[in-house]
Amino acid sequence: IKIEIVRYQAKSLDNSFRENYFEPVSLVFENNFCCNCGYCSSICPVGSITVTADDLKIDSETCIKCGLCFSVCPRSFPSEHIFTVLNKLNPNLKDGAASNYYINAYTASTKSDEIKEVCQDGGIVTTLLYYLLKEKEIDAAIAVTHSEDIWRPKPIIIENVDDLYKTAGTKYANSPSLTILNEAQKFDKIAVVGSPCMMLALKKGSIYPIGTSIFNNIKYTIGLFCMESFSYDNVINISTEIFNKKLENILKMDISGGKFIVKDKNGEEAKVPLKEVTSLARDVCHYCSDLTSEFADIS
Ligand code: SF4
Ligand code: SF4
Ligand code: SF4
Image 1 (cartoon, rainbow, N blue to C red):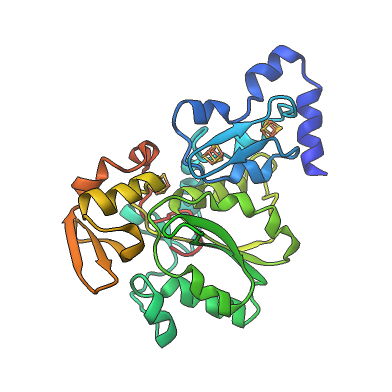
Image 2: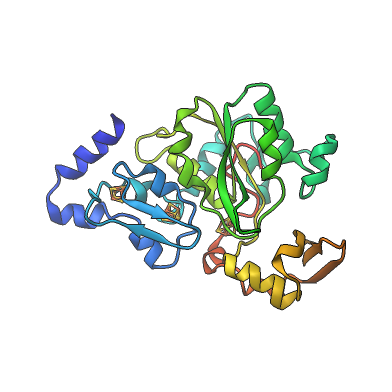
């Protein structure tokens, strides 16, 4: 019903006004600001947007110029200042200066041996999802797993703890995870795991354009720390050209202490200064101000 109201408002305006004020997100993509989070494709009421890891297409034949995608896109117009003001007024939050407002901060690592075997660092994201699924706090979670091509991530809906282990570990190629929000609407309560840009998209969508999220089944947003992500082609380049290793032999990739580190299946570890791979990061990641998922429920 709320989507219909937005469409009614757009349709009731004359064409020149609609042309100027209800543009779809093509503007964002064409100007190379799109981080391919995928939120616009899930929210489009007529399914006109297709987002992949490195592309975005809008079907101009079906687009009704409602402007919904533009109003929730994290890269269209800034919204962070609104949340900063709201946080400032919230007496339950502490001012973290560099990390924005927060309730509490902890240092933690998992106690589960199974999770320790597959996790990236402390295994906390996997452990949180394990708890939420086990205690039925959520029915499903949106996360990322490997696709048929190793190290090419794909978004996945996890419904049980057995499938959870498929999602553990960091994948450095980007994944348009929010494209499957629509598919996850059949669940009453979900958690979404994603990068800081995705957390901002969800936060922005919680107030624009109607004051509440259209995806009201999202109970928890869990944001990762993220310095940059790469196209899949450049993940291959990092592996083969910088580390001289076949991608299928890489067991783990990591960024730590200013180094990009890979560990292969023979247990050999190699590292290069991060600046050697930074130039291979996606252009859009060079325009990103959030390292710690400031807009997630849990970072
Ligand atoms: S919502 Fe996400 S995928 Fe869509 S245009 Fe904006 S940044 Fe790109
Ligand atoms: S119909 Fe609305 S949400 Fe879909 S592409 Fe067009 S402007 Fe964006
Ligand atoms: S660096 Fe920023 S834009 Fe790039 S994937 Fe991470 S959060 Fe998204």
